[in-house]
Length: 127
Image (cartoon, rainbow, N blue to C red):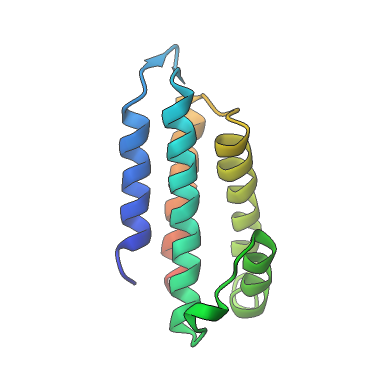
């Protein structure tokens, strides 16, 4: 696997570090949203790399969350169904709650989400 997804994840950590923390909460929502978006992109990049290794062409890579779910079902879940569930969680938490709605502030929650994203990236890189 190229270091692309992990590099994105590192960028997400660096974005979070730009936000001040008060009472264990990040207080600058701009950096939190950017970090969540970047971490979610890391997950998508990892899936793309997995699919490319399996012979999917760049033109055939998924273009929507439903497309990514279907690709995971078809190419990865037959080996590890937990990865689809983890992807769905990361989508809901990083993309929807963190980026789209800007609802995440807890430093502990965000650090755990980045750990979950790293776990997902490392697991999917083996398929």
